[in-house]
Image (cartoon, rainbow, N blue to C red):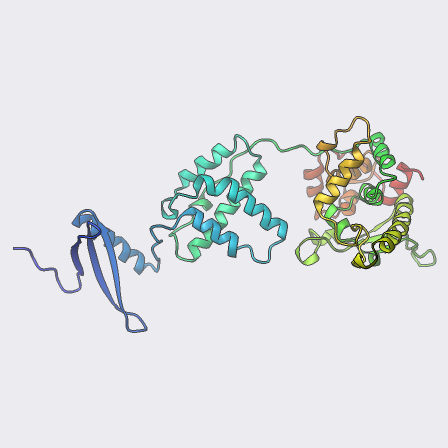
Length: 384
């Protein structure tokens, strides 16, 4: 005769529809008066009871059990839709692209609760054969943040992705800088281009592309104050960028830079040309006070600048336009100053790095032993 289960031990029955044994346990009532019942299922009585014990143990630990059908794709899509609120548009687009191309197609079908550290390690190792270390770090970050969000919402017990390290990937595209001869050729080739002033200012001040695209005329002084003590030369105030919130990359990136004579001349011509553009656009002009704007006064995006810059490079002998981007004007600024004997500390201050360590790490191939300073040196290098 079958022994009757003790009161409080729960129940055990066969479910014909599911063709599984179901073990249940009543844990009292919730705040609304509804009975709290936990269940575990299995093909055998023992499996069902063991599953119920696991459920009860997790319940006592304050952990919820992930839905059996909740996948990695569900977690990633939830993070993309709700976890990136307030982030920069470019950041959202980048995370979405990486997730759609690399994460979801290869790990998306895996049940989140079954995802193991070994799965993630193997996936990253395979990706390291074709992707750069930086891209691998971005992929790991996307998956890690997705699972972390799911864990906070009781979809999984722990985040195994956080336990995995990122392997070394393929070498990324090395940064380059223009030689003095190449820089002069680029400046000459850009003279009739709409991007001329942008190229001159980027090359001779080292400002970032996102800083120049956000630069407004109220932060530009092309006259200065010769009567002030000390004398105030013509300058640009690099106080904003196109990043979310308008902040510069770091606190030290917020800086005021003296303008070399060649920059002043280029900006004067640019402002006059922009005045004619404003008249030609008429009612279509949108006044944003931007120094570098489209033909209707709107903000340029990175693709606009990159396309126009490469168009200029097509007229420079010995340079393959497809291998260069506008940010390498900044690298060239560092290289030219270093070649001219400017101290590392001064270069770091001019480019707005948080420390000289950053300057050395990012521009280590351009840095050389040194001694003197910025706008004055650029005037000497590019004699007007």
